[in-house]
Image (cartoon, rainbow, N blue to C red; front, side, top):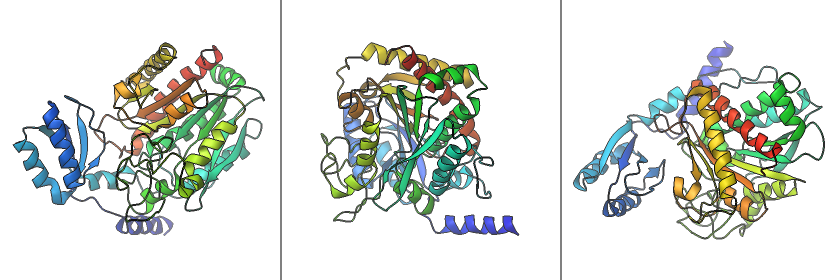
Length: 412
């Protein structure tokens, strides 16, 4: 009876949400500048959802196209002689297969890391983890969101005074594998301390600060209403809602308020953005006594990157960051064979202002600042099945250990 109720609840929740039946994801490859311009025009005309950004000639772009626009969009691409393939034939089918029905999690001891968890479960997990490991784990409130959700950080520390490694996940709401990876990585540290020599050594010398879900309003909305929602849920005048929280640390490049990458009128200028994630997180990180490394964890594309994003000019610490990123992707590949690309944000993907990695590198003096894109390379995109959570987390944790060792070695 209990399982039957759960199944009915899941069906009801799905039926109340936005559906994507017949929607497709196309991988489009513009090979000339005129094709890039034409593709940008089509994105605006059809109000398309870019799963990966337009990055230049011969660079694939993954585009989510609504069922009603599929035929017309494909005709337009053929007329422009822009090559494309259908990467995901039915988005709704992936949404329905992304996660399985399950009973709710009640404690740290019975927490299932190989399934996706909603906002409430993630916050409860942080509290439970701190209670389960009181000698090395503490929970702290990062801030309160526009819709009034408080969200927490989990710090793993064996002694005061250590340099701090901040791992931020879930800043883009639809990237579900990132909170899952954050929690899995924290579990490895907690369970491994005192039992694994490498983990014990790292925790004795580095404090790990995890923010598993740093866009709670947006994340909750992906569970209740729109699985593909990316932004916050800040409401302002007009019909469009939200700001891209990973663009709101700066406002050098303003986009339309309806855009998924809208960075807001100015950096930290609105009342709304001062109440929500970014200003709270900014204050939280800057209030830490000794932050020396920061990583903003995203999905997807399998990239391990560092500043700058807003310019192709190299940062002063280019070689140090390059070496750490390269060592990290080597550790990733050694885990399950996944190939990640290391490099500077602006030259590896695209030029974009307002990112957390740039902000913390330039403004706070955190020398080792990174932005990553986890699995996969487009087969599932943002809809990574639950069976791939664990391998994604395992390879990411291997990289996090490399990064923490760089702190121990004095590179940061």
